[in-house]
Image (cartoon, rainbow, N blue to C red; front, side, top):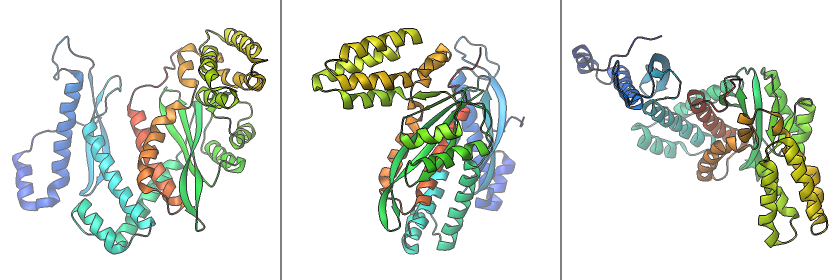
Length: 386
């Protein structure tokens, strides 16, 4: 465990700054950010070190080293810890995001073929200095290497696996097409979430999903007890081929949306939605099955197509009842990926059309990395205590 960080600018450091100027910046940044993080932890705990107070909501637990690459070089920070791992200093996280955003902006401009002169003008506003095409190319290469290492890192035991896809506009062979961004989120034995897979493919065809899932297995993914996803044909075929023996939970949110296509009259939609919710929130699988039977019988004459669809599709959304009651709410849907999808939408709306698949994959991977880092240092998603 690293030593407690010093949080004052010593006379020696002031002398170093006077002698070396900007070369002393890494040490100065380390001290200032460490001080800010310590203050933030103290505010979070509502107590100073060794202070006895009824307001205290936790205890400090030392420091964890973390090396961050910044524009002034590598800096090793001491990240303050708390015993229940519920704290992560926003002071450092904001700095990390801005550095990643800067590198990403350089790489994106390079890949999109922006002129060197325009890149230089933009980077001068961002960094205060002009960067030539060689520097921009090097930044893109370094970023791609980092993202590739993250995408191909070794995996381990994942209890629950969530699969989802969204579409982005990408220029492929001179035409703008909808490319599928394939995402995989897992909940490990520690109960925390992690983005375990990201890929960009020209469609959600079975071959692309199968390659994606097989790559997860080759990276060491094991121990899956349940897969949660939508019912896309290509995904389902690939899931059965790669994880044939693993139970599947069809996303209840998507089931609710799909049901509306079979409702014959507008005034029936609210009633049907309420009936399906009652099935999903039943106290047990037996109770859910009984409600489903009643609902199918109720619509057998007034909405026969709906009744047939309910009878065949709704059971696919009831696998969750076989799992611990405390887990069921978060196993019903793929909504756990929604925060990442919202951030992807926010960023890609600015880009508009990606110049190629690599450019799209770069941005999505960077966002997935940031989200996964936040989850790793955040609260437990599902308690795995028996």
